[in-house]
Length: 186
Length: 54
Image (cartoon, rainbow over all chains, first blue to last red; front, side, top):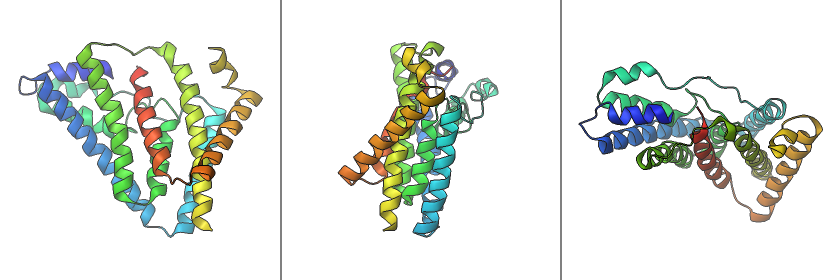
């Protein structure tokens, strides 16, 4: 991912890596805001009981998945390398949009599913979009900062430890969500 | 590494998950917060953790 972003920055975007970074981040936010708003709207389309049941079933599926396999269900791929051939703003825009959506490329951690799950459960397009926008800022904004400072953190050795840490947060978040769902029904 | 290994399989994994779920449920019951807070925490952490992906 970092290689893609670095190459997106230098592949030509108004001859400015800063502008390329802005385009990348703007399209990442656009993708995240779109997916979050749609999930929030989808959640709001159901009555509270149905929404709680659907959220509970999805949460159970994620919980069982995370208990039985370390790698989440995912499209195990990076962003399309053919986008690098554009050599203009589209490289940054397409990469940004895909990374902002999140689920069209490698997810890596079960915790990502909680972002989608909570965006649905919150049943508010603005709040849900705020949540997914925070994801895009963290993922793409963080990558841009790393690329700008020349720091390389892509290391497979870190992934098992990060999975343990993010799984702990996932399980705690699912416990939190369970209480919220029960509270919404009484 | 030991933590990663012992929490990825079998009963240890189940105990790890159960304890974490309980902590999250207690936090929710104690704080009374809605789903926005865990959503934001999960979003930021997931985005940061993904920096390490190949």
